[in-house]
Length: 286
Ligand code: C5P
Image (cartoon, rainbow, N blue to C red; front, side, top):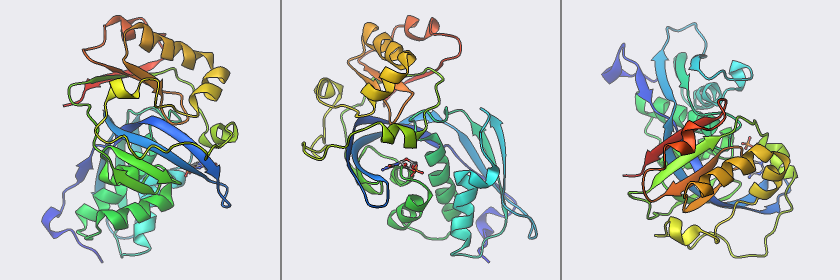
C-alpha cells in the first residue's frame, strides 16, 4: 500500500481555484456526443479549501463539506471520483476530504472540475505517487472536460474536448478582475445544445502575450449570446461591468458568471449595489 512516511498523522491542504474563459469557441460536434472546443483559460484565485485526511483501513472514501451547499450524492463528487480513479491504479488507504466550498457551482467557473483535479494532485503529492503533469492530465480528462486545465493551472490554450492544454502566457500583470455571479445555475449540457458549432473560423492559438486591450471586440464566448438571451440577469451583470469601466467583459464558460478586466481597482459601487443574492469576487493579478 502507498504510504506517506514524511506526512504520518498529518493532513494535506490545497486551494482549488476558479477559472474564466477569455474566448470560447464550440467548433464541432464529435461522434462521442461531446464537442471540440477552443478556449483561452485563465486561473483566477477565487478559492475553495480542500484537505485530505488519511483514514484507518476498513473505512471508505468520504467527503465533509462546509460553505456553499453542494448538490448531488457524495459518490458523484469529482473529489471522491478522483480518489477511486487513482485507487484502481495504486493501493491507497481510505481518505476523508474536507471541502470548504466558496466557488459558486453551475457557474462557468470550473469549481467542481478544480476540486477533482486538485484532489488528484493532493493524492499524488501525499503518497509520493510520482505522476507527472501529463499523466495527471490524462486522469483528469477521465473526470471531466474542464479538469485537465487545473493540473498545470496556468493561462492556457485549451482544445479538443478540453484535454489538450497548451500553456499560453498572457499580459495581465497589474490588471484587476471582477466577477459577478447572478445566482443562476446553468447545466453545461443544455448550454451546448443551444449552440450551432462553427469550425470555419480562425482558432484561438495565437493570443500569446496579449492583454485585455487586445481582446476587446476580438475574443468572444459562443455561449454568451444564447445564454444571456435566456437569462436577462446575465446581460444585466455584463452591462453593469461595462458601465463601471471594464476594458474587457464577457461571460465565463456556459455561465452564469460574468467577469470584467479593469486597469485600476473597480469602483466600489460595482459590487456594493448588486442584488443581494448575487455572489461577487474581485482581485488583482500580480
Ligand atoms: O465533461 P463534463 O462532464 O464536464 O461535460 C458535461 C456535459 O457538457 C457533457 O455531458 C456534454 O453534454 C457537454 N460537453 C460537450 N463538449 C465538451 C464538454 C462538455 O458537449 N467539450
